[in-house]
Length: 495
Image (tube, rainbow, N blue to C red):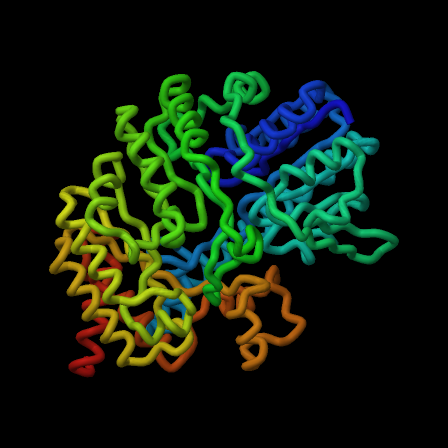
């Protein structure tokens, strides 16, 4: 194969770090292969089909590789129409709330169905226009639903689950993919291989951004957006609702801090990008990650790049010296999964203790915490939730307010979205919540609603608490804190 066209299917305007990493890896191993990246999110919707057609006809690639990042255009967290529609339909006694929820849910489901249809149509268009090309599909969305999607894609399509660097190189070289995590159809049957090794990030060199800009001029259009940079892949934990450890593996692999730093330096000085998100499963995933995290922060401080950054964190291992380095290097917010009940923490297999987290907040405050934000992503009504665990969570929130300051805390409410292949899904099938053969990509609105886990007996009370909180808070970002307060009042006073 002598040429590759990478196509980022439409999603939110998010920096395509995965495609850039793959294209950089291929270039370093096969510099004679011509590559090009196009990002359909940067193209007006009505022009995307024609733009893709023109690119294929002009470039005539031997391989057309699609990155499918998003699939569920609805989202089960506060501030989104999906959550409000579900809550109103389930809990409101007002007929207009019921009708409006049905209307908004219909729009969301139509958009969900339409976006899947359009993405499949782009892949079908590539197959039709260039029947001699190898068509490859990967990305987060595909990795979450490979069995369902591969059946609906053109024959001969190769699906890549998880990492794509070595699989793409083998496609280009015409080598066997049996030891890669891939899926395809053969003689009408779905064939899936599960790779036994993961990509060696430690061997990576800095991205050649001069080459990347040559094949992807659209990179400059991401100025003003958060730029995703990976420092590691893999997650050592087995949280019941998460797929990171399935897609990336439980063995954590690290990019060398000096390599990450060179990428950051180039992105700042070449493109002027100043806002970053460390796009790891967890930026501080485990105590074993601390030396490399500290080295990277030391380099950022020494280089005086003037960046701001954040990422999903596990804070329980943060002590005051590390907290100071995080603050001095430009952290803008501390983002973490959170529940204030140790019983729910243990049930979800999150592997931390409340007291360790509170100690970390004290260390962060003592290190000079000022105007940064703490974002607590709180799953309400998780498996095992009771009135007592909700009250424990409310109490823990107050303890965090006392340490950090209530104005500096945002609580992002969400209901667990049931991910295909997780422990949570398997347990819910065993309990009869789902049928054994249910379709996680069903277009049935009631099936979709079940994927947002908020069962009785607490579901109605939680939903009504959220609706009441919406009437009380002036700022949408305060909804989570108001909801926790309303829940606590209902559970303690009964009204």
